[in-house]
Image (cartoon, rainbow, N blue to C red):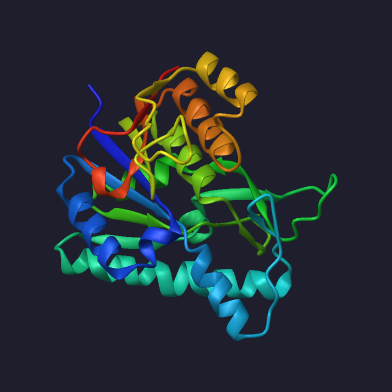
Length: 257
């Protein structure tokens, strides 16, 4: 019987607010079994870019990452945000280690090909080294993963944190019973974007297709759910989309295969 592992992905809006971050890490530390945390940090990157006079370009919510912006996101994600989280977990008696995809060669990506838009130094995940991660986890180390990967040839790549969480969950499903929890500012997937209480308790893939056609699910929630279904289909035990405040409380939207 496999041991349990909970992978929590938390967005930048939560990790960049000190009170919400501390509450999240308190709840995260209380989760039973092995744990892994994936974080964002886009707002901090945008703020530093503005201070440095580097213009931020977004297309459909995705950051265009030229060389200057890549330097900034590496500094912010792997440095400022990641190490702040690691230090906070250590203060709670949790032996955490900060990782990018380049560390221990845990995640390799390929630079996204130009089709209609040139996203620059953005990576599409090619492989996750589940063996190295599982060995760390079995040493009672908590990996804290920044949204950065590498191509194996020395190039760092900006990579979507939701995708990193999903691909990491899939790779570790061979070693653990994996629960993947996407935490963000809403209570779950909403039937009505203007009603925070209109949480859809369960979504099957057929539901998802219908909700997209009806316009109920749109924008950044579409790739988040695509990652969720991909994880379920690859053997991840459960996927939940919920608020940071509800972490560990079995609330939110449960994704069904």
